[in-house]
Amino acid sequence: EDLYTLLVDKTTGEPRKIVLSASKPRNGIEALWLLHREYTGTSGSGLAERMRALMRPPKAKHEWEIADMFDRWNKNTKQLEEYGPAYTMNTAFKINAVLSMLCGHTAEMFDIPENSVPTANEEKNHQVYEALVKKVMEYSRRKRMEHLRTDAVSMDIGNVMDRAPAEKETR
Image 1 (cartoon, rainbow, N blue to C red):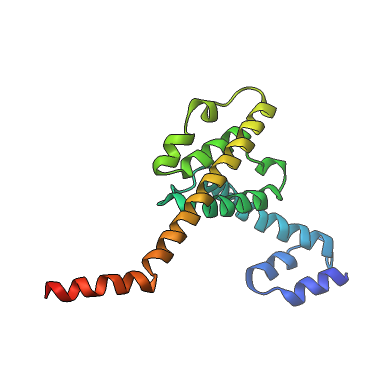
Image 2: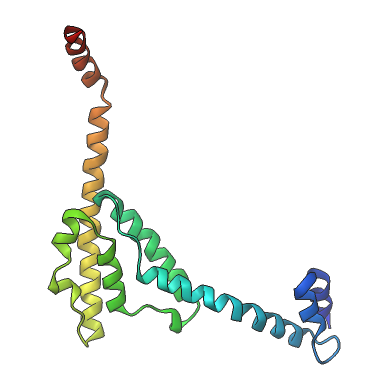
């Protein structure tokens, strides 16, 4: 009865109509179950859409972005897996998703049969996935450090001063 009163107090509009439609008057458990059924069914399609998006992540534009993209993808995958075993992605799909994020030289290096052909052995697939992720992350982080170093050098005040006299001579 307390649950029913709380649900009536805290809901408005369509959710309140659902709470009030409980067959037994003032049955909070049934009212909560009706709400859950209504909104879980609606969000179930949202969960399926999230799963589809995780299976086909966008391709990175630069090699140094891959590590960050993978971290976001991995976080979203773990969040989805919290909904239950039905939302746990098969390791072969995870491998394909990681490979689809790769761009440029990284894709050429890692999208090889050794990494991309799944086997019937899930444990072997998991080992391939873990090794692939480790190699890709190391490579991408190294590329990010190189990119950051390159940007820092081009912004170095010494480089600006070295170019200044050359510009005056051309005028």
